[in-house]
Length: 440
Image (cartoon, rainbow, N blue to C red):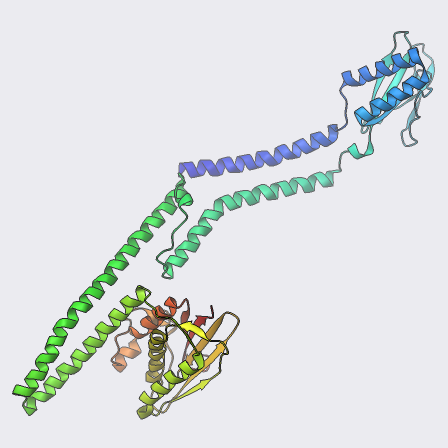
């Protein structure tokens, strides 16, 4: 934790120092940009004055042009009597009258603009006085305060964004992986580079990966145990079934048949439960045999089968909608899923009721909606109905005979197809189950 605090502290400190340094540097650069040192300005002045006195005006102007290109500015040279030896100052450069020279007489000298120009008084070898003025070019003027403020603000925003990304990036990754792991993706792991960090975030990422591996191992062991036990249970069940047949043949009295039939019914229920457990295990292994299927015909056949089963309860199933595209699915496994949903809808709708099945599609998926005419499910239990061996209070009171794995099997089958199954209470009553399957 100390390491993380130190890193956060240093990042904030460096960010603030960076902003302050950039701001101060910009201000200093723009204020001093084009300024010459006192020595460089004096040397330039003495060079110009000496060439003027020794070689005349023509040489002075040529040398002045060379120096102006070198210094990136304009040079103005005045004699002590105010006569301009080079170009005169522009009109916006104010003149100050009544300046006293060495002899006590008043002379006219240019007053330097301290915000934009530099000046130097030059005394030649012949003891004559000159005034040299250096004015930087216009493109070297410092920007105004508003520009500096905007630039500083952008610098602060950039450093803050870097800081926020450094702090929140790993936490966002952790949140995304935790959500994926919670939704059943047992392969969800954080990037190994993040787990190799030596601070608290790296330790948290490492512990998350280790926890995910342990949980995955426990779940796999549990599923393997259920699968193995289910296989082993089917052998004694088969022997009991044979024993029942023999008991009916050899000692089958009329009074005993009732009890033998009851034993056989219980054996069949137990065998069905074991079959569901084995089906769940196969689904966890991702054993799918996918084929390209016309979903319209496939759905119609399922509706017909369930409608035939429910005819004694006088339940009507209405199918609506069609899709234009074929789906790549495992028709047998997905049939189990939809049959479980439809049978649940028929059971909870009751006698003389209506169940609706609608089929729609969009750009990315095909959607099957199954709505019953029952009382719906308590909002608290909507997510729980997909848990294995969970039965709502209504199902227990009604003694439905199910084991609470039908919707779990449907959810696993949809997940194996990269689809989803959700349930909600319809506004007009009844439970509506939505099965969505991706087109690709």
